[in-house]
Length: 562
Ligand SMILES: Nc1ncnc2c1ncn2[C@@H]1O[C@H](COP(=O)(O)OP(=O)(O)OP(=O)(O)O)[C@@H](O)[C@H]1O
Ligand SMILES: [Mg+2]
Figure 1 (spheres, helix red, strand yellow):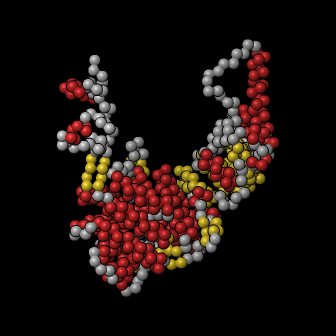
Figure 2 (tube, protein in one colour):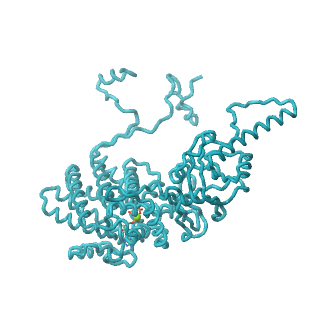
Figure 3 (tube, protein in one colour):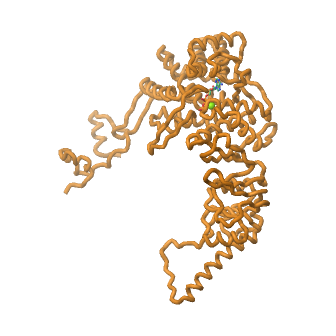
């Protein structure tokens, strides 16, 4: 395709343009170093928040909304990171979050360190491909070690599960109430766990988490059923219904407004009356339909006309309107009701069941509790707490706690925390590296050293000297103390299993997998081609080009010449 004589120009020895003007390209070690630097900066940022003594971050978004958090994935999400390689670190923490729910800081710190050590190796003229191979080999060995050292547990043992939940919350703002919240998390997960072959399966969506600022964290409660953040539509409706027959409706109980402005011409008072009577009859028919289906609790995703509310109340039917779609879906699952798309379709076959439906006052608001549902696997947690930010962070921490309990219920293997498994993995990796020959050995050793960044960061954040801590840890592991780790509260090296700081094995193995994947991916890149940001619209032919001299009018370059 010839355009603007490009071809002719090339024939005269000029370069052929294959990329849009303004595209930036960097190659080889430049490209790699750029990427690595960006990723390491991200890792540095989150490192100080690792562990029980880690710091929290305050993030302010472009609307001025403040988030205070210690959660790796949340921090990175809120940071609005632009650099493509740095974004990969955000992705890594997201993956960790969705796969296992915890360890989102660990994975980023680990990936950063793997990259740092890779740079040292590249400085020694070791080719990235060799490093990548070494890292992959080391990853495999590390995962094997984790499997070997992990402790098998009973997936229904509440005590162990509570300990695991507590460890995940020990590093959060809500750590003061970790015992209380851990119990709730464990009870919730055990309630929804389903047998799956030999083991169990947990669907986290079955645990509905609602939050309401006010009260204190110890007012947080587990509800065996669902809570809906809505109030009963009309004050004359009962506040409590036992033996609730629940109808779920995804349609408005109103007279539909037409899309276009329409006019009704009424000429006599009789006609007005007839019109109103007809409207009333329509509403009465709607209520009759509901009643005939045997419904005594009607939950509606759309609006309900005042008059319909009034008629429903007169029939003793409780109703709530404008429910969220997700609530409707959860209610359908929990009560066995079917969401119908029009009141005329509602029949007794669509009706669900719950032992009680009650409106309760929570702080200044009211919420609807649907308890004793047909499906006993539906549970909710209502989080309370002093301020909105505490409630928000409590929700995130509870997500971690629920996830780690789920992890252990599904894969009943645990390790102790405080950096103990990392030191053990590193020690065995070094032994393994001894047997290797060639340059790959250096890469495996570098991997071993990288993984020690976790105990080092824990020690540093706990105010200990990281180098001293590391040498003590290495020495004690060499003596066979498998679970020697950093007791962050005491600032000493201790047996973390005895301290009952326990974590799911899968959190550690997923972190190793994702960090290796991300770091090797960045190491493999040797060319970055970044297209320029979208530019101002092109100037019309023949116009605008000479307008440069118009000073402040430069921005009007796209205007046609007059
Ligand atoms: N009492 C404790 N003493 C020492 N280390 C602990 C203790 N409790 C937890 N840890 C350690 O803290 C680390 C986890 O810290 P943190 O929860 O801040 O980060 P994360 O789990 O990687 O990421 P996130 O929780 O943000 O998803 C783990 O290595 C864990 O073993
Ligand atoms: Mg954690």
